[in-house]
Amino acid sequence: MQIVHVSAECYPVAKVGGLGDVVGSLPKFLNELGHDASVVMPMYRSKYLYNHDWEVVHKASSNLGHWWFDYTVIKEKSDAQGFGLYLIDINGLLDREKVYGYEDDVERFCAFQIAFANWVCSWDTLPHVIHVHDHHAGLIPFIMQHTYAFKRLESVPSVLTIHNAQYQGSFGWDKTTYLPQWDSWKRGMLEWQGAINPLASAIKCAWKVTTVSNNYLGKLKHMSNGLEPLFEYEKGKCSGIINGIDYEVWDPQKDTYLDHHYSEKTISEGKSKNKELLCKEFGLDPNKPLFVFIGRLVGEKGADLLPQSIYDSFQFIGRKMNFLVLGSGETEVESGLSLLKNYAKQDYNVYIGYNEKLSHLMYAGADFLLMPSRVEPCGLNQLYAMKYGTVPVVRATGGLKDTVRDVGENGGYGITFLNTSVGNITHAIFRATELYHQKETFSTIRKKIMALDFSWTRSANDYVNLYQSFY
Ligand code: ADP
Ligand code: GLC
Image (cartoon, rainbow, N blue to C red; front, top):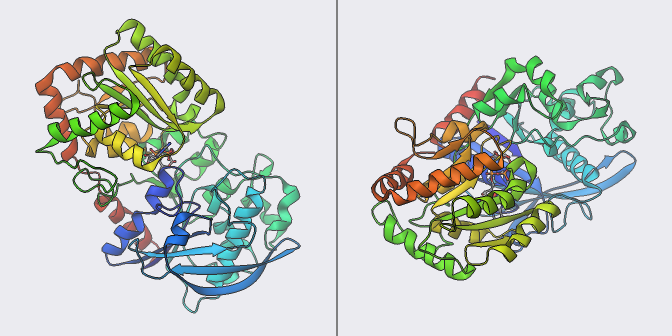
């Protein structure tokens, strides 16, 4: 089957979070199953663009309301990622440094989606499935189903995968002219709570909707930033498919970002070397257990509670552990974490910013990964951590609940807690510190998590079954 993924992110071209990782790996595994999967995304001004060779496959013009624009579709010549990778260039709109965060994001992603539909409409043979990811591509199912200009796409099945329902991309009806013409009585297919809501529209218009874990799908009916009744209403076409991870990229035996590689057999020595490197760089003590946090510094991830939880751990458990935080996000959280350095110099440090190489070294060198998420649709960090023998300490929610079992349970291998609260986090840190000193149990758990299989094999098959249900 020919499957076209449309997304704002795709690793290694452009990644802000897990969406990039998923879109950068799932198509490769679909292709390994004998399909023809490709990715279409905006052409940002990324390093990847300049380091690869491209060919122009299409040039045309389209319009965003009264504004006519030219667009160009380029393809990476060698299929270096294991799938066809297409970038859409719209001069001045998409070719920027960052993926998101501009005042004209609505215009940027609307124009991108219109250009995409315009291009696909010109194909001799249409794809079997168009698979859109999150709200940045969320207007595509509506455009395919309900606009006159793209009527040819009406019969192509569309799938929406929701990676994060907190962000929905809503904008006002004053921008309705951005969309190609449609019958005004279909307004309900775009609207949610008085605005044009791309995520809600995709939930209504896509043929099937998936979320990145089963548990998260259940949660959305009770907590989805206003979309709760919609999930209840559309539940018939929704299902959860847990993300996989790409062991070609994330494997301590061959990780290209690491100087010291290791396997289950050499875990103890391998992790120690990486830990030493990390501790040296950040002035930490390699003899104490090392807890790390990697991620967006936002409330969703529980990052706002980190400073107090770390402070309380030192107060109540003692200075028996180190912490290292990598992330960027809300200003107050960033400054709370930076200020904590004044209090704890030898056993705490923080790197504010995005650093792919450092993240790999942290997964390899840490003993524990903290994820006190309030919301976690799937979570990839805990899966990476486990492959690197780093024990996850997580709040049992969404995908974290589906992938981490507490050591207290029969066959458990991580530390879980119920609520995103300072008390719960500190208690989990206490439990982890105790576990660290039970040398034999700790070593068995590390080996066990390295051997767990969170590859794409099963989930890619689940997607194929979903696509095949249309035919
Ligand atoms: P989300 O997509 O909600 O941010 P995920 O757990 O699905 O969370 O994925 C996060 C991805 O982004 C992981 O690959 C993680 O290593 C990476 N990441 C997050 N923040 C940073 C950062 N500051 N530097 C490097 N990598 C980061
Ligand atoms: C989102 C979610 C995260 C998930 C990722 C990839 O960003 O917040 O939990 O792992 O998408 O699906």
